[in-house]
Length: 265
Image (cartoon, rainbow, N blue to C red; front, side, top):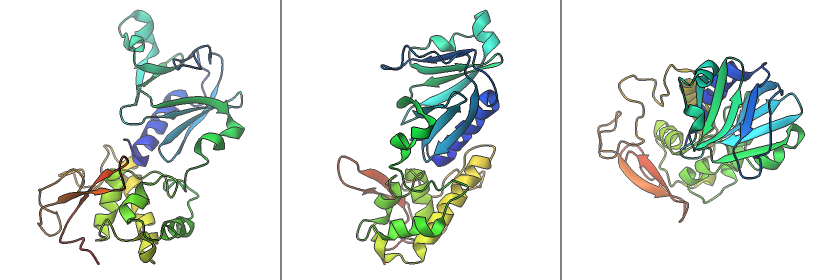
């Protein structure tokens, strides 16, 4: 599932194509929204909350979308669709079409599509914890939420979007590896390290969001240090990377870590 850095990158692309523009085409190919026509409505901005996208419109509504595992937003030149040079908008998996005179944005395989009054966005994202990429993030408050999880393993806690929002399996693993934290350490025992995890997760995702290509390392030789690198050598000590599980069925997620650098404390 795309994590906070990818969602920010998507929002920026949508902003470049749509913000300040009036939609010439606005279709929502979603069960209860099929009759909605957004043509003639202006786009104010594309904002994010954790892994959620919020396309705010000038009529006081917000289009809320979520990529889930397979969703993407694809940009196509509107002229190519009009001329028939592209038939991308006829893809049966397109769930949203937001077009301007120049660009058409296609939401493909989206996992969530909602249209709500902007004033009521909290109905959809109010359950989320602090967004680690939000400009106004209070790192101390976010750390306090982590510490309040007591005996829950820290890997599971970082993946819980109601505690802190934006991290997925990649940046959870990379953040814990950076601080040599065993993934099953009780969250409530981390003390000052909890805040360091917050600020590191934020820093890693911001770097990736701002990079030419997504990266959890900033190193062109590899995109991650531990995630997805089972049995390959740890970049720090050379020990083969291991993979375990965080959480309880059916919500267990893979956790990649270094058995030497991240020993049980």
